[in-house]
Length: 267
Ligand code: DGL
Image (cartoon, rainbow, N blue to C red; front, side, top):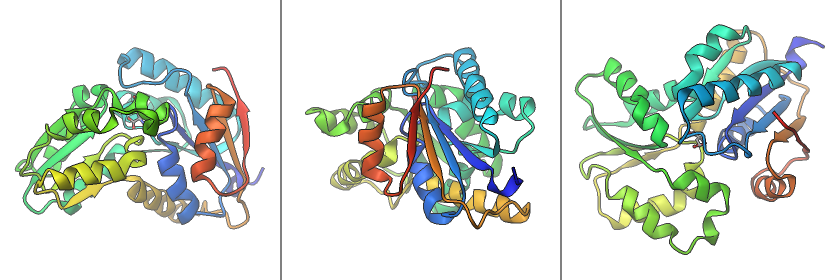
């Protein structure tokens, strides 16, 4: 197969990476895509580095067998845990979300005070802290681990009566002086409206709530252009889930408006 027509493989522990895929479909509509959501094993945010690495190796082995030209880690937790290992192990280009989130933060903060909402694993790993301080040691970073959010988003956020209380408990831990809040889990853009309304009600100093999916989509476009890998005649989309096919279909059909195939797999 001509390398340009090979798919861009996007993966996440579940539905979160769909927030990245949606942006990619806007920015690069003529590419072929495959997406893998490991909905059976979610949440990754509560797992160990070893478990996350083992699962992400199974995912990448599977995706590479589908013949893709590059892979996109549309998951902060997998990036924080295993990007360095995956980058060494595979010889296709792998693009990850965290460096894009970090650049978004640096570009947006004016008062050098930022807050980050992420999974337990991402917060514990301190990857955001380390990378941001590498750019600018003066930035004050508050990290909030939001353990309950990802499972609730996977299982239909709007069906939970206590969702606002749960979210408020996390948002009150954000530093009131932060001017920038980064959604450092790809699931959180799906509840952006609720996050915005609580942040506004709380009268914080936050001016920017950042979803880094636009930034990563543009980085991928730049990478493809710089490396002469742009496809102008694709447009196919295939999903793989390790979870329930009907649940997966119900979720993605709300956000993806083009034709797609869907297959259930066991990793
Ligand atoms: N969507 C993933 C992220 O960006 C995490 C979800 C999980 O805990 O599996 O971190």
